Image 1 (cartoon, helix red, strand yellow):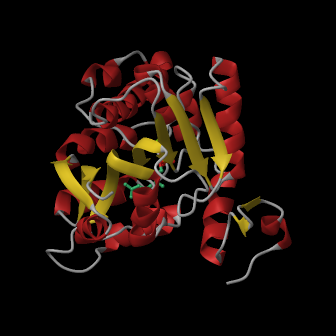
Image 2 (tube, rainbow, N blue to C red; image 1 turned 60 degrees about the vertical axis):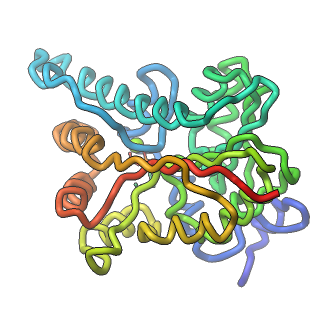
Length: 294
Ligand code: GPP
Ligand code: MG
């Protein structure tokens, strides 16, 4: 393992945030990312998401007069992405305003701000992209919640936060960047008994065979390593997390991709998602797991 001088300038508990060449390439990807599919959707209401949408779309947006159609489609896609976040938050259970939450892989902050609005509690987000951390902290300032919602340039595999300091931890489409066993070991440390982990992810179907071409195309596009479905449940069990709810959202996310494929902000990855979901080689899952360790 090698580290660069720049990385060693940013240490958490004496360790560099970026510890491998792979992590450096992931950080470089997200530091450079300025895709309209994320920025123009975020501009709709100031919640900038880095995940996909769920639910049916209002087909009338495709009939809107030409000069307004583009914006109507973007607003509709954004509504579906915010609906995905609402669904994630629906599974947090009882959260008190005094609890602390952790957004692992917090992107530009959309999910963290929605969590703070709903529960009133403090949220910390971590990201290995300094640009995303800066963007999200600027948003926190602009929203007047910088004292409650904070973003940190830290590695979710080793956050540096206190043991048993978190009531709920979530990952919203970020686990494909890390080893799940390492990740859930850190989450087990951070939540005490009674703590909860909520995940939305895309995972490959390892029941029907090896990795499909479409799943490999998604990996290539985002510099990620999509995990097989079974890997989630193995890694959770190995770290004393018991799944209490698992929802297959695959059918619910397909309309989002169909609308996105027809939008002006399509990025070229839409066909791979639609193919992977429709052929059954890839699933979009929500997993809720309670920590039963001590
Ligand atoms: C990014 O969301 C999401 C990922 C990198 C994870 C990959 C997700 C899977 C379910 C495999 P984004 O909003 O930044 O992506 P895009 O720019 O394509 O909208
Ligand atoms: Mg996006």
